[in-house]
Length: 292
Image (cartoon, rainbow, N blue to C red):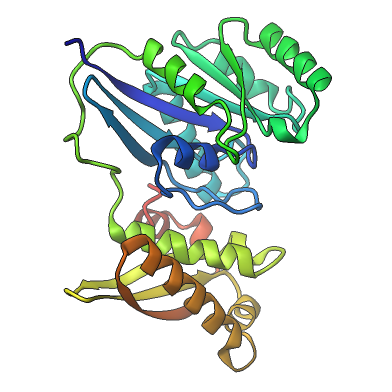
C-alpha cells in the first residue's frame, strides 16, 4: 500500500478562522480561539493519521506587519511554515478584502507547491458574493484549488481533506502514528490560561500578556499547576488582579475548568501576576517564552 505524508501549513491574515479550521480538521481543540486578532502566537502542530497517510497540520499566527520583536518572531513562524510546507492551506474569509496584504500574496503566488485556498465563513455571505469572490481569488492565485467552507459549522471539511490527500507526496510518517501534537502539556496549560485572559479583559491588556507555567506536577488523581501572568505595566497588573482579586480568581476558575476538560482529570491551579515592561522586545525573554 502506498503511504502519503507531509506538512500542511495553515496560513492567512488574522481572524479568518485558521485555528477553528485546524481544530476541526484535527478533531481536537489544540489551538485557542477568540475573536481578537493575534490570538495565535506560536506555530502549533496537529497530526492526523490514517492507515495510508499522515497529515502534519500547522496552525500559524496571522500575517501582519511587525511592530515589535514578539511580532517579528510570529512572522518568522509564518515564513518558515511557508517554506517547509508540502501543501499550503491559505485561509481567507467572506468578510476580508482579498488584497488586504498584497505583498504577502505576491510571495505566496511564487511558491512552487500545491495551494488550497479556503474561503471561510460562507455562512456569513450570499451566493452572488461568494461566486464573485471565487472568481477574484482565481484571478489572483490561478494555480490554487479554491474551496468555500465554514470551519465553525464543519462545512466542506471532506472536500478540504480530499484535496489535501490528493496533493500530499508519497513517503513514510514523520511521527509515531499515535502522536497528536508536538506541544507539551505545559504549553497547552499556558495557552488555555492566556485564552481566558483574552476573553476576560478588553483593549490593550491581552496583547501585553504572556503566560509561563512555572511548575507542572502530574499526580495520579490531580495535576498541580503554578503559572505566571506577565504584563507590561503596573496598571495592567491591577486590572488583571481586579478589586480584592476577583478578576484573577475568575480567570483562574475558568482556566481550571477548561484544563480539567482538556486533561480529563482534576486540576489545582495557582496564578500570579508579574510586571515586565519590555518582555515583547527582550530576546532573552522571548527565547524563554518559546518565540526564539
